[in-house]
Length: 305
Image (tube, rainbow, N blue to C red):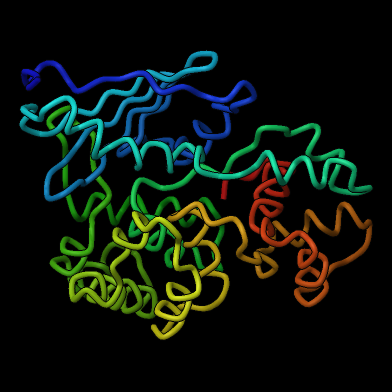
């Protein structure tokens, strides 16, 4: 069935009993100017650049289910095709592919982390609309505050000027970043090194050396291969890789010991100062959920990194 331009493709998505929509909404509400994401009490509207065109994704949360609407620019996509193409992306964005139940079952009795898990049971890691969006966010967020990173992201989105007919902006994909070039990225506030790193990953995506979307769609995420490819790019280190794997692919085992807020969270649990080596060692026994532990430590401190 093909829908009219005024009727987006729509479907119901079942949600787990303890699904925490608040954490998903908080992640997408980081930018108060709401250029590319608009967040209501139980609604998320997000602009996504998808297969060469802008899409408006709307998710309305209710107990045990979400109503998903997927509206392309032309509005003439077959309902079944839209659901088939968009459902994996939406499930990944909402953290529904993450095995949090096994993690909570294993560590609920942990003397330090257990109380945190019981307080935040059901916490899933919100994932960006596309892996490239997550990678760009990770690069822009290197060694600056979340507020400063949000400002950089906003300026990048404005510079690319990709809009759905609803008015929502879309985060640029690799082609649009390359079209901006170094000078316009610098004018948008990126440092020389961050602009060069962002252009390098965009070139990798365009050339096929970094098939981010293919990796995301793989039955088994090739995390080691992704890490190796990203670490070969100047300006990308272990923190950027782990963060990208988490926010771009929903991979839960990156070690975020290089994250200041994660270290503060560990220090709060241990009641002592914690440096990177000690944080790395403390996180190690939680494999393969080390990044999920990091997300719980962010949430414990009410930080939407």
